[in-house]
Image 1 (cartoon, rainbow, N blue to C red):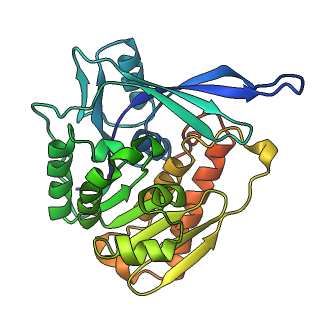
Image 2: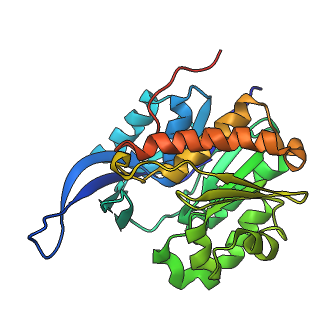
Length: 318
């Protein structure tokens, strides 16, 4: 069986609003300018599909017009929906993303509490596959039994498991209750990725090496910490690697929505093309990590210059 990238996560319809400043007005005005399918892992998988890499997405949406639009969008972008559900009596989720002058978003979500399906199927994971998951979807109580079952199955198969913590401030009041679940996700993962913002909320620190030493390495050996337009630190049991992120001119930034998701996609696509599997991760050189990180940055930078949450379609490699 050939390698695939498999994602698990939520789907939403993102309605984007842009800040319009008037020097004579006391407050800014926000006007809608785009509506695009989204969701953290979903965004990553669209970029993967547009790269021509075989991929599947696991999740669900509601049986309504928005839900069907999301499914059609996946089909157009090369994502298999074999393990994706359209649920009756459920509405597709919506999010309002208000972008400030820097392209950074403040979100308001309209969605029902996520619940596990009474019946579901999953791919036959192998050691050649890559599995991406994360965000609140992976730790919320309603979905936890299903997520843990899928995660444990992938772990037992030797699949590379990439966990994007993506912990939002709106859930900060739950962090103590959710921390054991986050730790369990880390324990079952091959790579843990998070932003400095995530860890500032969770642990009150933005120091990647401290975060790795105290909160990640006891559970997972590989840690990637991103800091937006700053730098990327990769911590492994053998060494720590620091990579700078090229600055994008402010007037070229349209939206940062999906930037981190596209970084995940770019890094995983580079792993796929270089056939880097779980047994090789802890012995990778700085040059090898640099190759993966550069592709992640390339994907992320493209998305920052676009109103979409994912890269533009590119031709698959042969």
